Image: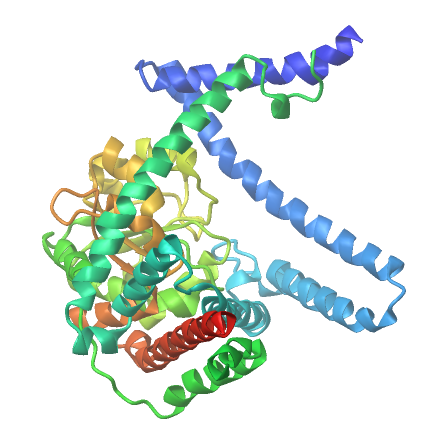
Length: 224
Length: 272
């Protein structure tokens, strides 16, 4: 039981402390050892996130495979198969040695075949979905931006003025709209944002201290 | 009562109406004039204050999803930087960036034979603040090659990099709001910000000050991309899409008015 607690509770805390203290110290003390430690850990944040991309691809295909096995509605099969086809095509073309540029030792991600797949499938559909957001915003604005009460009215007015500031035709015929819109963004909004930012900073400090003291339950698997 | 019925417009009708309204000017451009905002003027003015040969670090996320919204800004900015004689370093910070940067630089009309002399592209690396710290302290502790795997110390292929080692060699950063703390507060480098309408505009306000910085000017979204094209004189896709944006926003205003009229109608109906 004691060893189990050590692995689940104490070891993560030791690792957090070993990581956090040198990094905090590096902000206040000039020392080559601390700087090297900071540099190495900083680089590893990138490596870890890159590895996560690879894991994500494996997880995605595994999920697609299980969805095919478990789904009783066979109508979904063509959609899943098409997704797998496009995904594998991108992977195979991108990683193919046939398209490799041996002078630069690059695999095929800049080859015109890959760029065609990438723009034609991934680019087109993802941009279409981003564009759809405009329609959802339109529908939401119709339902939400109403003079219901004081708060909703302020939201409506400031939102509409800043939106109009970004619309060339209004700035042409109502020149006062542009400075007013910029004032709302640069002054009115800044106050609220800074207040939220300070709260977040204090909150992060608090969570950090709780983690280092072992009082943050999300950082450990068991409680004492 | 009639007003109250306005509040029950089917969302599919709104979608269809908006699609038609924004589609028309893409086929038949109307040519509505555009004015340039102060934030865009400050963005251009800041870049133009530097002498030829200054080094600009551009942080290029290049999400292909949002490319229509931000591509006019990228293209006009690179055209301006190269025309002003900047030496440009390009950080690829998103997984789409290695592909998108080629398209953007081709649209900006760069001379690829000058790669390594006038500009250098680093390999794609997912970069959070810790990674930016490492990069600014010593570029070679983070990257040993450019994106074509040529050593940064290779004076034949990358002569530009023989003069650049860390943040003290940067004059200007073109990035997003996320770079404020590292590049300006810690390193004292001036920043101008670029980005999408949704990714930049809501966050830039607190950091924007055209006189004291840290962000001296910003451009966000295709509409302001059109403004940037006018301010720089490099007209492109940004100005072409402004008609659609104008009509879309006018329709949005009409829809908001209809929504409020219907609420008024419901209130009146309730009193009766």
